[in-house]
Image 1 (tube, rainbow, N blue to C red):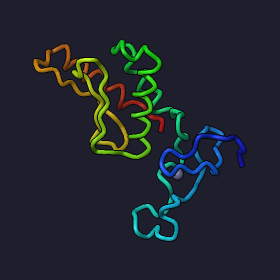
Image 2 (tube, rainbow, N blue to C red):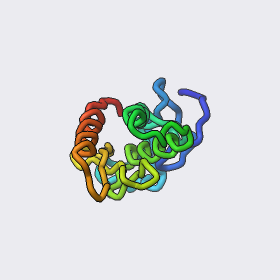
Image 3 (spheres, rainbow, N blue to C red):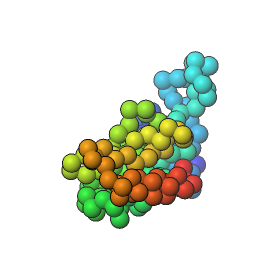
Length: 151
Ligand SMILES: [Zn+2]
């Protein structure tokens, strides 16, 4: 059992759960579901299992940011990259249909849930007059995002 301390599970907040070698949380039960695991699909296992604790980005979220970085200069600011990365990680750990992360000052570019694959994200263009170049960028980046194999 790892004795490494961390800020707690991003889903249930437990800090008494050890980390695996890859830095993700070991098996544990969501405290709120203790004894009532039959009430939810997948049992009482916490959704945070296998994901990194609060404040730490998993490989999937890191790869998403790395793929977007060349196209969105705002992400060169580490604080912005962190906020977006954390939003992607949160969605990855606890998929949310309402997920949205805005990537630029004019909100033309946003990350939305990838409906084909729970907990993953896709790029969407909200520009009023979307150009061919915009559509190409969307296709190119989404193809790259779909290639990410890490959790
Ligand atoms: Zn948990």
